[in-house]
Amino acid sequence: MRYCSRCLQPDTRPNAVFNDAGVCPACSYFAQLQHVDWLERFEILKDVLARFPRRPGQYYDCIIGVSGGKDSTRQALWIRDKLGLRPLLACLSYPPEQVSERGVDNISNLIELGFDVVISAPAPGTWKRLMREAFMRFTNWAKSTELALFSSVPQLAIRYGIPLILWGENPGLQLGDMKTLGRTGYDGNNLRFMNTLAGGSLDWMVDAGLAERELLAYRYPSPEAFETSGLQIVYLGWFLGDWSLVNNALYACTNGLEKREDTVANTGDLHGVTSLDEDWVTLNQMIKYYKFGFGRVTDYVNEEIRLGRMRREHGILLVENYDDACGDGYIEDFCRYIDITVEQFWEKVHASVNRDLFEVCADGSIRRRFKVGVGL
Image 1 (cartoon, rainbow, N blue to C red):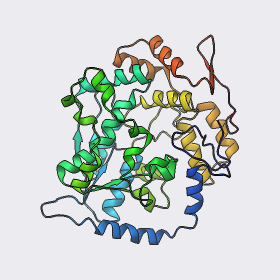
Image 2: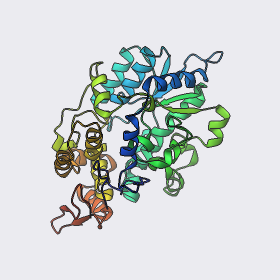
Image 3: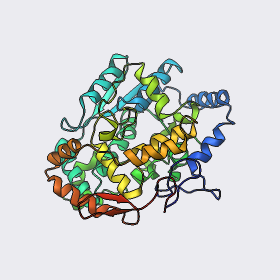
Image 4: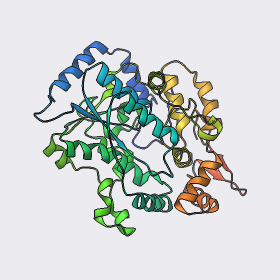
């Protein structure tokens, strides 16, 4: 394990390849941004949008996947108020046991801001069954739910006949998941190759006893379906020079976004603005940390380091203190939902810990073998 020489990105991030100078893809991309003509990019965006004129009978210009959070709120307002387009917002709804009240309030806020929102809701019984199966098989409860989340937008785009899908950040350029890169910096049709979706086979769901008809919500449209429907995903973040986690949050909060109020020690959410529609993502981030050596705080501080708003040394302290943060209450709620004990939860987590990076102690605590910012 080694770290980027500029930020705190470890080379254990899936699909990340450092250059010969030891710099991660995201930092390399950020360095290039210092020479970008943003007015020229805005003109490129207008040219791209002009290739998708509204068809006869098509009420909306584009479709945007939303959770009601910082990124989707900013995208929706910018597209409507800056570009004068009429977007349809698509939201995948979580079951009542999972969705947070603030998540419901933030979607309501988008509706009150004047947007049309279509909500899809996969069968809750199947959702719960797959979440349990994903956790027990892969120690990753989100393996199924993320498939549904990412699949819902292109599925709805096909159903509504809206070929243009506007997405937020480019995971290849802005996070370092290089397999998502398309023909241009804004071409998002290779999103299907991101780490979250790359293992998108539904075979394990069928093996678990689910029928094909129960899995429609979890099936990402094929390349052939994209081509037949003329779908194009465009990464909007490529066109916005001030696109960042904190900037998007500031923009959204001034337009009614409700933040998370729990402590950083319980959530690892430094500003209380990430994944606001549910809280179990907190324990999934903790597990990701034990598998790969980085979690939510690492992504936070990397952006701030690149933007010059945080020193690397301060970022190291935050990562050391909070990258594995997860309140006991979130774990207990999750275990109650998928019907396992907290002891069973930790048995699975301990079994999935990357032993090259961590040591599981006799008392059940987990200790880093690496030094944050240095590696192994």
